[in-house]
Image (cartoon, rainbow over all chains, first blue to last red; front, side):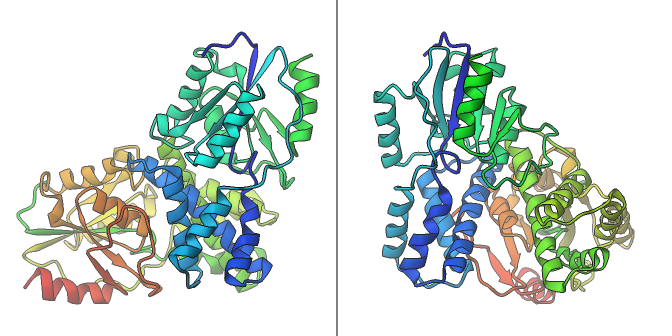
Length: 233
Length: 233
């Protein structure tokens, strides 16, 4: 696909459009845990999920994202001393697969702006949701990292996206929108501009790469303002 | 260098020979923190140190280990809401550079066994300590990852080690000794055998790679028994 739009917005999925912190509730009900303990295990799950993707990148290996997510869950539960059955894991994987959307970016697609999703997902339900959005003309392209067998922040993923949206040689016209600092840093290193969604309002503290995000917003509603005021000005 | 020994023991440094958990005491005294809080920040420091090395690998970039370690400290302190001066960071970097050795592997070098250290270090004092050990004929070779501009678990690091000890084509004769599960998994994926030092006695819960360690010991004293009873039998 090529695009005649001046700018492209590329949305990360997990941790940006989908709220990965919401699985704590399902962990709490499955194992009868206090809310705080469940939130800790949920954070550990997410941490091992990312750790595994980076270790796979380092080892020049690839496993699909649902496999990585399930292994990370098993790791987090074992490390936390939780006794679990295979059916508990399956149930939690289904709830992960039905994560809630974060506050949505409400603007319809604009003439001068196309909206893309960039994610590491290979989950069937998420693919389906995204295809629905695509059918609604809310997005043009869905890019999955299994095409390049690498996870972000590998440059192959960002380069693949630039190619897919017809912006080869013009990566600076692509704005990654992500809540994940490692993703922002990776996109900047690949020549993108990057909008960091800092929902926790903690400010930019990541030290890798030496570049701060192009723009920091505190939610996707603020992103809409930025896009309307600056990019479409 | 080539070796006539049947087996090679390759020791990881940080988290295996050097006790990275001991910096908590220095954090506590520098910032007047409770012991538990300092231990949490110390763990966060180590976590970002590893995260940064894997993200650099993913991005095909390299920064020296002391630079990564300092950035990770800054990140951990900022995230923990600690106000710090540049001189606090410098002081803590000096203490990191003087980490205590874990319980030592006491056996002298054996006829049929050479002992090697494999690490990501580029710290001058650690290099000096290792050169001292080398002068004492306790070790033959020190391998640093800055030679290949990659961090473990990148296969380049393990392959570089195999070459350096004259075991090209015979990686299975090299035993990595490491307290870090990601390192054990990386070595196994490169055809090594791997001895995991499970000081916490939590058992093997890492899910990546599908291979368990060749041997699990709970300290370097047990390693000595394993080497004497099995490898030198």
